[in-house]
Image 1 (cartoon, rainbow, N blue to C red):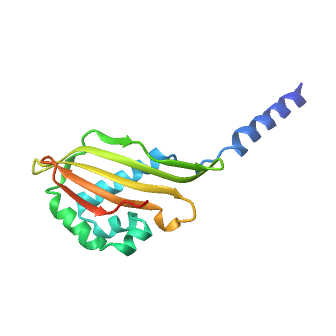
Image 2: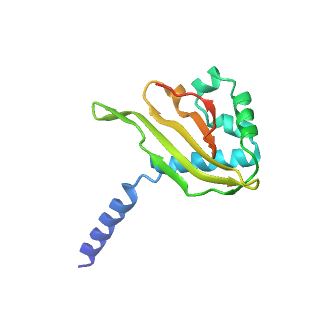
Image 3: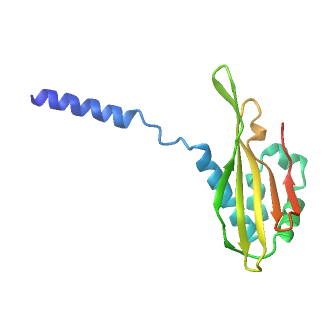
Length: 159
């Protein structure tokens, strides 16, 4: 009886401990981290941190420092409310031969209000997987809209 108990205990330990991959982060969790980082950067005018979130191909083809500075000037005040938090429009998934070759997220940060009474929405796209094009992993664009539906963009879409 004791042998059976030890065998069952050993099998249970192997199954629960050896087969879990705790390093996996879901696309929605990664999108949430990007969202938190973007809001932090806008609230603290942190150009350098925001630049690091963009993919290499956008970093090399755009004057991100100037685009980000322009967006920070467009964004009036400090964030007092993050509104509804993160919403997620459909991300794109492309599978080839049963393997994910492209994966994007397209979060929507809605009803962000600042201490000046201004209201904004922020939309962005980030590639999480882009097979054979690691230079495209990261944020490709951020669009910021004010309550008058005026828009400022940082980066661009990648196809």
